[in-house]
Structure formats: structure tokens, C-alpha cells
Length: 428
Ligand code: GLC
Image (cartoon, rainbow, N blue to C red):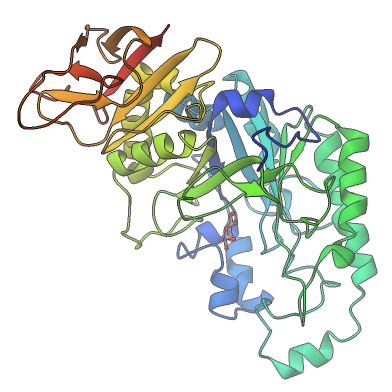
């Protein structure tokens, strides 16, 4: 297996440095407030869905507040749904009437958001749905809201996928020519096979050519149904689960990012209660970076245009930890081969500074033993307060034999009052 990381077609420097991003799922589905796939799950027709279009008016929308919350949480890039599967556009697209400028809100949402996040120093990513359950030429298929409606399927039989494909490419061109530099494109998603849609339906190859022509630095995710090519994707995107090791394709390590929700829904879901704790979310971030990946954490704003209190609580909690521990995340990656991860810990490593970070998920009693590191560490400290952690020789005892190459750290009995304590090791 190769340990060289597969090169990306775009600029990945900010991505592997930044490690933590904000995903934003926002659209008409914020009004029903019970998951962004509501139209599919409840088999809603365009007529059923119309009231959400007619009442979309996020009067409290303040993208500067969103951008500040993301930066203060330690996020370094954001990815926003320009359009989700419902087909509703957050910008004033010339190619459809199904857009925010035709709702009571009446103004472009996307431009001010990009400006606000860029002003806070974050990189810009666009999620763009390949699917469009509102477009008149989008053929009904196995994931369409009217998939079980024989009459609707018969009435839609003449829909022209070529016309839809042209519309899809025209909107991607708008997104790459009207909002300045874009750093990341997150297309979603392909479902080839019977009654599905894949790279030929989208002309995914043409989309990649279009992106490379207009903004060659853009990173492209892995959902264009081009995984069997070496030019059709840059980033693997496992979602809603934690991988066991660095993601590989054909044995080669690749750029990867796991996208995850705070709760059980990407879009705002008023009554969904499975919200992860700040501790869980922080440990997810650490675990991800310890395996060389990025974490894209999702917020679903309300239809008034706000991050709800539950989301703000998590963002603030993560920001508190990142404020003191960010250097164990930013620019860090998996520890070099041969480093053994101590029990109940994760390791991250910064190759530039040659520092190893021990993230302690369960605080041990008095000692932490690091196999193979004896003599390799010049200094050790707790990252939260830069207080020294003493390195002590292994104590010979008739209870157990301690190998010569073990580095033993002497820890305070009381765990530092932070979400996840981190020990910073300055390697020789
Ligand atoms: C899942 C959800 C979709 C969401 C995507 C984000 O596919 O079904 O709604 O946009 O994850 O990766």
C-alpha cells in the first residue's frame, strides 16, 4: 500500500491545514422543519410544497453572525447548499423562477453569505444538488417524491434529460462566475443503475471540465459517479459514521472529509432530539484528524435565518476547546508509522513543528505510558495551560516489567477542566 497521499486536481493546502469546516443546509425545507428530504419522505407534490415557497422570509438572516459563529468555533471553511434536491436556489439564478428572489424575502442570500464568511477568513465551498425535484425536465426516478405515482410518471414520460443537463451545467457556471473564488464543490449525489442517474445523465465529465476551465483550484468531492477515474474527484466524503483508518482508494491514501450532523437531520428539524454533546463532537474531530481527515459539521438554520440555540451551544463549546487546543488540530495529521497510540487516547502530529499531540479521552491515574518514545521527546506540557508534564523513568517493580523504550509521563491526579485534555510533546 502506498503512503503517499493521492494528489488532488485542485489546491488542497488550505484543506489539510484547516481540518474543520461548517456545512450549512438551508432551503425551503426549513419551514416544514422536519428534514431536508421531507418532499421525498412524505411524497409531496409541487403544489403541496408551494406554501413553503410562498412563506420563505428569513427576516432575521445575518450572515455576519453566522460567519462569526463559525470562526469562533474554530472552523476554517464552510460549504453551503446553493440548492438542495428540492430545487430551490439561494441565489438569483437566471435559469429558473424557483429562487429566493421570487419569495417574500426577495433578495439574494448567497452573495452576502460568501462575503461574510470570506471576511472572517474562511474558505468558500458550495454544495450543489445534481438532483432537482422541482425542475420540469427532471425525469421521475427511484428517489423522486412522485416515484410511486404511476399517473405522475406517465405525465412526466416526455421529460428531456438533455434539457435538464443543460440547466445543471448552466447553474454550475453561474456559481463559478458570480461569487468570486470558490475553493470546494460538493456535488450531491449520483445513484446509477436501474431507475437511477449517474455520470452520463449529469455529463459529469463535462462538469469536471467546466470546473477546471473556470476555477482550476477548486476541490471536487466524490459524488459525480466518476470514482473509477483519476481525474473525476479529489475528496472522499464518508458521512454520518466514523472511519476506522485513513481512507484509501486502490490501496492509496486519499484526501478525505467526513460530514456529520449535530443531530439526526441536515436541514433544520425542530423536534429531532438526538443532538451530540460537545464532548462527542470534539472527540469526533480529534479522531478524524488522527486518521488524516477533515470534519465538516453541519448546521441547519431556521426559516427565520438563525442558528438555533442547540447549534450555537455546540459551536460555542467546540470553540472554547479549539481556542486553546487548535494547534493540535490545524496542520496536523496521523502520527507517523510506528507510533503506538496509548489506551483511551488519540494521536495527532504536526510535521512542520515536529510535535506530537496526545488527546486523552479517559484520564488515567498518575501515569501515561508511550511505547517506543523513550529518549525521543525533548519536552512535554499540557496544552490547555502550558504546564509541564514530567517525563519519569519507568519504575521497576516486581508487579510488572516495563520495556526500556517506554516513555512514562507523570500526570496530575485531577483531569484538566477542558473537554479533552491534550499533552503536547516536543519531539527531538
Ligand atoms: C445525505 C442526505 C442529504 C445531505 C447529504 C450531505 O445524502 O441525504 O440530504 O445533503 O447527506 O452529505
